[in-house]
Image 1 (tube, helix red, strand yellow):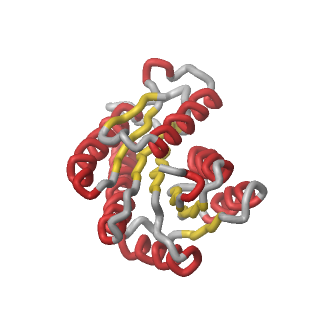
Image 2: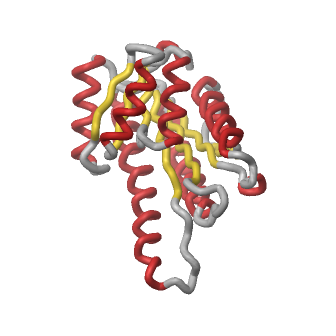
Length: 220
């Protein structure tokens, strides 16, 4: 895929991961749409991207429901008159509580449920739009951790991303929609965040640009 001529939608664009991915694809010449529930961080990312290019749009989303995502797509149609060619689902994983910490179990369960919901709803809505328009699109699920000193919970999220990526690729290949995933390498979690970030970005770009990549997850 020619990234320069693409419309790229980045979720959780206000997060550190989402912001770095957004700025990178803006620098490659893509038209980038940013969305996030955290409006202040979203605006910060928008300002950073606008220093690189004017082809950047932001949409503060109320939640991750299909109704809110439909409003997001309506905004994209109105502003750009083209639907996304690329979805980058950026996700940040929280540390997992100790198995004996009963007080924290509900919070962790809710966090995993949120990751699954974000993966599925954005992926479903984007894939449906790509299929309707017979667009040769790409969906990339990318995860990072908010604390590389304690990466507990990352393996659970990585397994989830792998499962979604492989199952979606089987379903979407007949429609020429590719699906890939990028996760941090658990064996090298002590590496400085900047190096991990660079690898996450490089691998995400590779998946988008490589027309033969689908159904696999790369470790950064």
